[in-house]
Image (cartoon, rainbow, N blue to C red; front, side, top):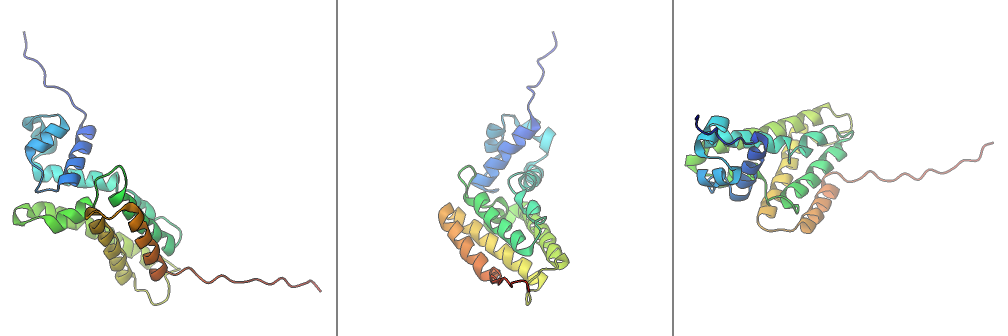
Length: 205
């Protein structure tokens, strides 16, 4: 009688579980045992499906960008610069301090909390963040409503500095409500709404 077949598993579900573990515990704080337990597979199956820990982390980052972090790409399609920035800043609050996700940002946490032994994971997260900033700069370069005095590159740097700061504060325990207040002030300061014009009616002659 042939031996039993390996237990089947859903790679998408397993990857989502790995994402949650890395996001909650950080790259260096996550062991292979943590991953196999969360994913419901053994080490040979993990290696066969996803590669080693670094390769798995790269796949997790891709999943993060296309899943919980998809708001960032969607924001670039907003019709105005102000809406682009607002969606990015408010989306960062929901991503990093929401009720149903670990607090903080997977990539920001990885960049700031990894030592030399985790250099490949740090490079992966840095590359992801730089790609996002480059896409934002290009969106600003193409905009016909960029406010006077704003350079596309500097503005992209500033927006990412704000969203990174939100992520760091969320990881430190700042509440969603607090961070939305910070977002409100940042948006008012960075891109004040245009003054309202009063239109007077003129009687027809």
